[in-house]
Length: 610
Ligand code: M6R
Picture 1: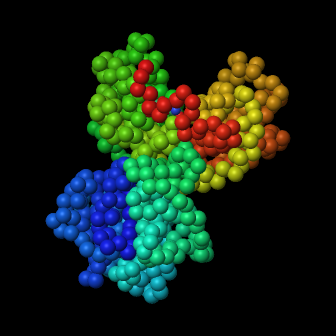
Picture 2 (picture 1 turned 120 degrees about the vertical axis):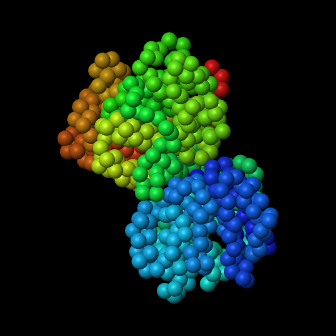
Picture 3 (picture 1 turned 30 degrees about the vertical axis):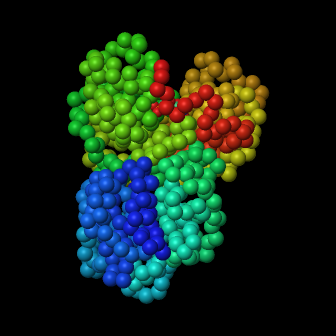
């Protein structure tokens, strides 16, 4: 993921910025750069590859100045080349570092070019630099220029901007991508996270979505999305070199849940070209395949179950989803498995590693869908698909699961297109639909308040059922797993249609049943399952899209008092959008019970033994 750093009022800004970029390295990047301002104007140094390349460039061509911005870039729009590395400079007077995607950049680029702007990169970010130049020319201060630019852009962003006309100021803003300010005596800093600021400041302001402002060396003038002056809390952090911080959240898990819109954005961006078209960094011929196997453990296995629905419906390609520890010992039939994909956050789960190895030995092509690029699985598999979730500290998978889902859906779309199941038009529609996901996830985050009283109720129960149908069945399994591992409450997930075949016997007065519902082809049958459970005394907790709730209430008026609604979405995106409330429900229930949320008992983040 891209990383941003900025400084004002530092004697050797470039050195401080380079140190900040080093602390952002964990996010992953493929190019980096720094720009500073001194009396003679702007100067920029950029390099592709490791930060050591940028450091060498700075050694041979040092930068002076007390104000500067720096960036580590993970290429999304525009390939990995120096011209696309940030900071991006327009007209030698505005320099921009940006994290996120400006969704309407093509239209803005056309308009700006028509007005005479000369673009030097392929990035969406460059429109920001030209928009700032235009807004500054219109008069007013840097804050007004920022407000004017924000009114024109759509998408997700965190950015920092230097302008020649305002040599002692930095403009900043965030929407869906994180940004934090670091305060120090006589100096001010900005960074993507507290980790980046850890060695320069122990007083941090985490910007809220929609915030923007102007920094000087001793003040931060901040405004909210409506342009009102904003006073944001200053959080004291202790310098913890090398450690990822909680950034003001109570737990890493809480922070990681909140990062998911950004994670989805970066996971998508990594598989999109400049036109927003999906591509895979693989030379894999899905058209010739008879079948694939998804191998994983825990949440990664459940992500595979969701992925099967997509691969089979969009690509007509059979998928065997296997619990890794079972797969390698049961002599599975391999003649119809052309590709085995190990799904793993850590890339180190021994069960999955060994299952993948076994599949390779039996003649399958091997792929790794992992979050850690340097992991064993990534090194050993023939093909690698990286998720862009960033470091996940909480033992419970949240954002890495989200990133896995995004990539598995992309995989199904690309495979479906290769196999002729999806035509060009449909593929384009799916690309557009996928682009809406970060925004939908951001909107789903609003469910937190509705979940609080439900968590209070669940924290007192001993047992709970989760129900779903279709692609929401594995999401029900994931909901039950999250509740179990975090709050130690017994929970089971079932396919709604299975209830009558046995589990309905468990239902007695007051048993909580978490029902997942979206307005898809399963709606009528799932609603019947909910009504059946309610008729036997279950306390229904309905987690559903807005229109599914309305429909359900029209058809079965007193269905429940406990409900959580998320925005309507294409049913293909429902597993992601509905995963946010189930994670929140488990998180809040666990915090109410006072369990160790980030390190639940008996669990390790990465299971490297059998
Ligand atoms: O690193 P992996 O994705 O291979 O880990 C697999 C499981 O151990 C992991 O998903 C585990 O189930 C989590 N605790 C779930 O929250």
